[in-house]
View 1 (spheres, rainbow over the protein chains, first blue to last red):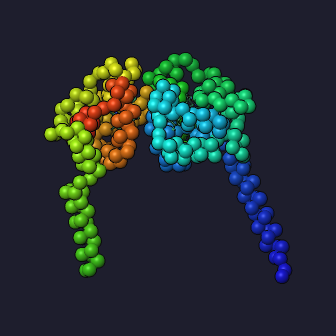
View 2: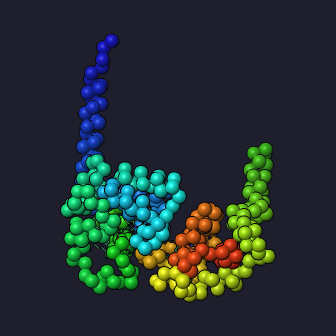
Length: 163
Length: 133
């Protein structure tokens, strides 16, 4: 049997090329954080606030948060065990330190190895990106809280944090 | 012609089922009625519950209207700034059709506002109020 080297080689080149293009396309927009695509996560984690992009926190942050939903920033956000487990695996699989997500790791810059920060808005990088936002803007009645990303980043639901 | 007939009877069946057969909302109300041993629910009592200020829950959420707004047909707003679709069933027709969702939020929101669970009577009154809105 003869192995058809040629088509195989062409196939590999095409594959490598499209991977390259894809990586470029993502690199082109460093403000992009893939939004939550799972409908269950969107429903359960997106009703009180924007369903935060899983890539904005490391996996261990999500693991800790999902284990303490009965006291979630003062709210009781607890869910049944099966739903909790399903959401946890989604968040962990798409977390900022899950392989290959360079751009969100920028947001995670300065986070100590092993730390499990619970707030995106307290990440050193997030704080420095927002240092120029004046005080009155945070207190504006349309903003109310730093966690209300959509008030300023109108396309946050689509994953874009361009100004 | 035969096709037409099938389609028409299909439509008729659909209209009939939404109009006369019990939907998830009716089932839910029936469950609350059984649990409350209630003779009936009152939209007026539901409205009172909706607008009343309680002191048993969290200080920043004294009332259902804190998040759901005074106007049942207008959008509400969570404390995090997130918009909440109107609670009036006429404006948000998808509401109160998933019993697990309704129960989940009664549990959370009654704890926030009243500092305790709502009784089946209160739940039935409140649902009767917003379904009629």
